[in-house]
Amino acid sequence: MQEEVRLVWPVAAARPAERKDAVRTDLEQVFRASYPRVVAVAARVLGSRDQAEDVAQEVFLSFGRSSVPAAEAPGWLSVAAAHTALNQLRSGRRRASREEAAGGADTVAPDVADAVVTRDEHRRVRAALAGLPRRQAVALVLRHSGLSYAEVAAALDLSPGSVGTIVRRAESALRKELNRHAPSE
Image (cartoon, helix red, strand yellow):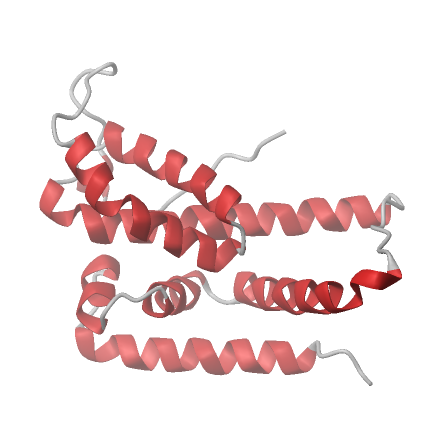
């Protein structure tokens, strides 16, 4: 059962197009210009290009139904990708916890130990990221996905000066969370 994705955007931007079946005339142009960045943002959160492409599909469907001006699309789409990917990450974490409780633990062959360690480290980072306050997590993902401070500020409706503070706090909280749950050796 898939959970409903709830994204938070300015109310005016999230209004559906006039007709339910109306297709935006600028959708193809926005898609071609923004698809690589949307996938990159989602992949940074999820660690999987396949999952990121699924997220991008959801994000562009939402954009296609919205009345977001094309000029605001890159920021809107980046934030939507981060929110949707975080939602997917959180629902995956809950699903994994349910599966683990049911006794469905993964078995790993000994010859892939290095890959398992790397995968476990990535899983720990994603879990810690999912535990951050949403605004911090989104700012951190957007900034580390290559958006400038000005682009992050515009996408999250912040002042450019506050982006650095939010990103530093997010990095500190992420580091603290990772250290708190670090495996003891």
